[in-house]
Amino acid sequence: MEWFTASEYWTGRLVFQRALAGLYLVAFLAAALQFRALIGERGMLPVPRFVERVPFRRSPSLFHWHYSDRFFAVCAWAGCAVSAALLAGLDSLLPLWGGMLLWLAPWALYLSVVNVGQTWYAFGWESLLLEVGFLAVLLGNDEVAPPVVVLFLLRWVLFRVEFGAGLIKMRGDACWRKLTCLDHHHETQPMPGPLSWFFHRLPKPLHRIEVAANHVTQLIVPFLLFAPQPVASVAASLMIVTQLWLVLSGNFAWLNWITIVLALPAVAFPSDPPAVPDAPLWYVVVVLAVSALLLGLGHRPVRNMLSRRQVMNRSFDPLHLVNTYGAFGSVSRIRYEVVVEGTADEAPRKDSGWREYEFKGKPGDPRRWPRQFAPYHLRLDWLMWFAALSPAYAGPWFGALVERLLEGDRDTLRLLRRSPFPADAPPRHIRARLFRYRYTTWRELRETGACWERTYVREFLPPTRLTGTAQRS
Image (cartoon, rainbow, N blue to C red; front, side, top):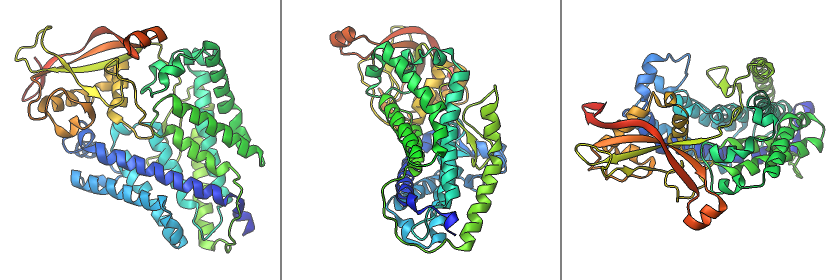
């Protein structure tokens, strides 16, 4: 069975598994802390309504059989517990089959969450975590050396992530071909980080170099993953460095981190692997059979990558076993933000005492500097960015958000950084206004201390009050 395993990747597997468990932990923690306001029984997009209209075969989930907020919380916190156990290395203390089942548990639990999460979970990194998490089930534990075919499949996923992202850029916005996208991206990205202002203010020639280096890393380097060592290790290391650069420049949930984790098994770490017996026959059969299935399903993302109508971030099966990825095929030139305000006045006027709600991650007060949240995912903040791009993105949930704020719903208020109204004394009216935001210059920053300058554009939602249900006043 020497052909089946590659003991020289023993350390790479170990580092990969522990890092992946850490990302699972972050994902489940975000689900546990945010679900009530987003998809709970009284959430903006309640799970019970979703499972009534979407059959199990289209969206497999435990919550098709039973849903309550308490049951969801149990599943989410159970996911945290299993992830923490994997992070601590419990799988290495179990028999091979027990370790595989332990890795299967967070995958099944998170699949159940994603498949009822609706627009709040419609991000590429959700499917990527599931696809990679499923492969982790096949990697084995300390009883066997890493299977060669699974190591290949992990590189194949990394190839599709990077090469697909590179193709979508070259086929998309012309600024990627002109090397000018980073003149705008750091300012207009969904959730800037604490260093994004400084990245934006880098000299434009350096921005050109950044874009060119990105094209090399995404369109050429991925092919080197399948070269002999040490070339594959160098290719994976270049991808890791590029992703760390992106980590510094913004908040992209765990997208960059899981890409880094994917690159780890391709690195030939110096190690002295222990002597282990040959892999048992049942394990060989399971790994080869499932790998053959995954390779067979892989023709869909390949066909998508080769298509001139390439799409980003789509799953080709309800279990999220094979998916297509990509980001920022187009880059906004102007940043818009929806600012939500409330007033306690019985009859709202332009000169009413409108007070602004502050979100945790998205820009609001021009003087408030962005914080680092990634790999933690602030789902409401991300969707507010999409809402600013077009009201159509906000259609399914924004009215419910306004209604919850008018009710002083505590679960919804916990998603915010600060509410100007206590939960027991909510505002009489809510309005939303659209502003254009831009980064200040070095001079403006020194004079005002503000990293943003904002200009009123138009009304996004007129003053709205509660009359049984949220209606316009």
